[in-house]
Amino acid sequence: MKLCIDHADTQEIRRICASYPIDGVSTNPSILAKSGRPPYEVLKEIREIIGNDGELFVQALSPDAEGVLAEAHRILAETGERTLVKIPSTPEGFRAMKLLKAEGIRFIGTAVYTAMQGFLAAKCGAEYVAPYVNRIDNMGLDGVQVSKDIHDAIVRNGLDSGLLAASFRNTQQVLELIRYGVKAVTVSPDVIDCFARSAEVDSAVMRFTRDFEGLCGVGKTMLDC
Ligand code: G3P
Image 1 (cartoon, helix red, strand yellow):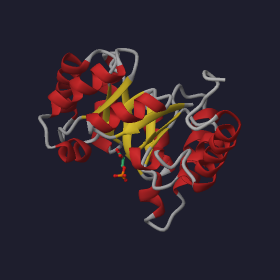
Image 2 (cartoon, helix red, strand yellow):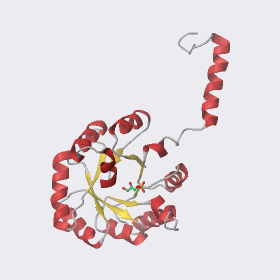
Image 3 (spheres, protein in one colour):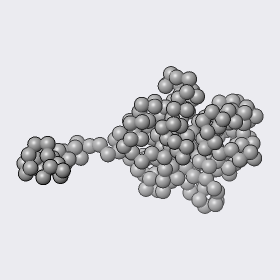
Image 4 (cartoon, protein in one colour):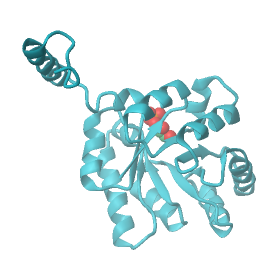
């Protein structure tokens, strides 16, 4: 399963990449707006951080399919051929997906709130489908279950696609999909920070240090004894 960062603050991306096994970075127009910087400047810096093998996801905004195709060409020219273009999973978006598929451009079906949208994006050739887990929860539905339904629909219909589940508010939502074996998740730094942080873990590590210092002296490690 791939783990991506859903963010465009390059300082945060560097910090998370230094500690965690990160496979890529996803952005959307709102995330880019939060950075307050020119979009291609930020995206190029992200590309430098994650390298050419890292997956970068960039959303197109054009309301019509031909516009999305033109945007896709510009996005790839600016950020590298390995970038995936995010296309909203709407009727016009599906038309755009078919145009990109015909040209061999990699893309992801985004803004997915229902299993049917996810299935259709996968059937149009989307390499990934992005259900918005927490936003679906906030509609009074079950975002994790919708994501599992899309995963199952893809697997059972033999489609060459998988999830890039997005919009998480807590570790539990992410963990449920990791357990289910989805293709990828993209998570904001504040939720990633909670993956391995707890008072119990900190206390266990401090106890080891204190015990060892009792044996070998303050500040000593296995290098000093
Ligand atoms: O790209 C979609 C995803 O980033 C949405 O996340 O946190 O705005 O619900 P959020």
